[in-house]
Image 1 (cartoon, rainbow, N blue to C red):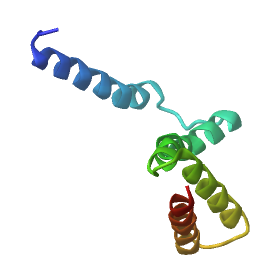
Image 2: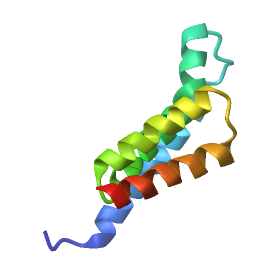
Image 3: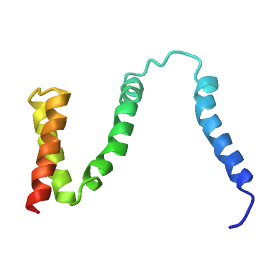
Image 4: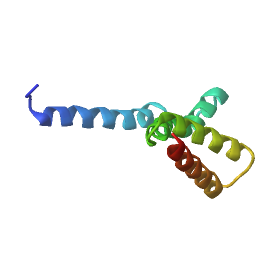
Length: 101
């Protein structure tokens, strides 16, 4: 695969451009469908979660420590703890589990 890299860059740029331009040109009216509106509302959150979750598990020395810290973070966030408390608690969980494991 020693083809010209500029061809790959051109194809990537074209696909990226089309993904961004096609919705603007094809959908000119306000979207009134309740299901579609709720789906589009949650797309950024789902995308962020999909990118973040593997990093949480793989960033630690052992996946078990990452998974347990993730669980602690979910529980604390569910109970209403702030971002700082959740992140510090997750870091402490990973720190102590890495010492033990």
